[in-house]
Length: 170
Image: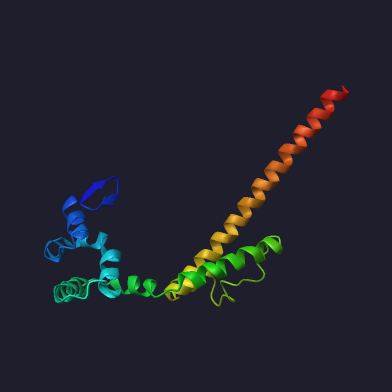
């Protein structure tokens, strides 16, 4: 694994092992190298395979054995179970609602009432709720940026208009 100013990259050995689905080579990877491949490995192990052969069944068992000792796998599994299509639809509805309401934070489709404040709510929530909280906050920021850009453009147009009136009448 190469390290360049804090960024981690998958080694060529690990990349080739993933590309060829060589589980023996994957099993030989160090923990930090394996950690970079966790989302791919979890998906390989848990999603229905196109290959129904006995060889793949054995390889899948080895992948599951590799993943069994890694705590972060549970979080990845939880994220794989999220219905992203429904989440996207809710985010679009939320965006439309915020646009109609002028960016107010009153109603929300993504997030119901917060019990303990945003930070505590995020820390104590399941993965789907965390995604909903993050999306809701991103939409708030996007709306503020849109409003700020609109305000800047409005002021800019007003200045140009005023300048053009002053220059034509003076």
